[in-house]
Image (cartoon, rainbow, N blue to C red; front, side):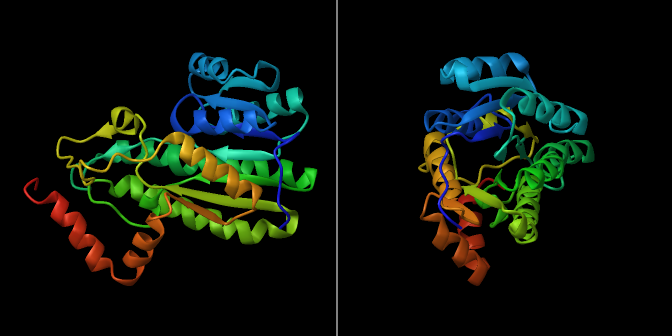
Length: 266
């Protein structure tokens, strides 16, 4: 696939009011894209648009990805304003920090509705638009937790494993239509993920306190490079690649390390 450019492209970013989505929207705008920032809260979407500072090439829209009619409305308004959509970024997500034993099915459904079904609805809505336009790109912001299941994150990991599989399968299906599907898998990222997550009373932290995580800007840069190069998947930071491979080959070794971090907490 020939290398892309952002100049003149139109991108839609869900969950764009903070964190990774905000950073992606800002970087894309800086590189010449026109960007629609979507968030459940229109005020927060407008605040993010103001922070980005590219008023002439951005717009902010309220959109809860759990509701298909809101996705369709956002697509219609973006097409009306920018005439096309070249890139769709599924970034909206919800964390859930609890064990399988401690989780409620209501919380499971809420997280799946946002993380997985919201992304699927976005893909289902935008694919016909991109087919008609003759191509495009879908970017799914997933997680290393979609390769390595984490204790006390079983539901979150489940949504990301599914996102990884669906995105990669769809990529093969859509190649003939000129639509690339990129899966972005960050490791630990310094965001308010934990603050905004659903928390169970039995939650135990797996991450060692010494691990600070990477910045949202680093994830945004990796996402941009993955798009420009038409990649299948981007894992960031790079040193998570061997950890994923180690888990695939010797899962017991990685599980031993995670259990060691949990020692004394169980």
